[in-house]
Length: 159
Image (tube, rainbow, N blue to C red; front, side, top):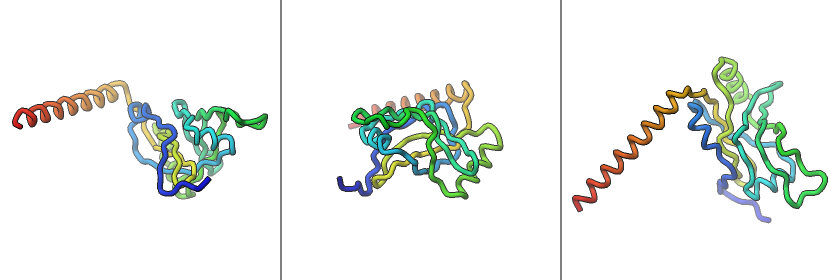
């Protein structure tokens, strides 16, 4: 099979993360995967709902991400939820580690995708939102949507 070039094929995204957290910084990290995990991802099957990242021993890890077993896999199929190593530069790992150590910050996966044939994960250093922050964000979004509708309706009346 020829390698994909220049395409960004999103496999899974964590849309709830943007609602539950305030995103500070984002990073792109490679993933160390087994063969059956890559095949499951290529089939478009993964879930980031409970996933989180952490730094341990100077290495970045991704845990609790659900990549289902490959259907045509044999007895050596991968475990569904296991901790997977992420590939980041040392400086990025230190920066993330210092931010998380401050307190109140967490490492959240936003999406898993293939970039030039390599599995990547988009990570965010994020701070948890309180309930009133979530309501405020939702209110701002609905206000903007209503204003856009009113503007387009007024524009269409003039035509």
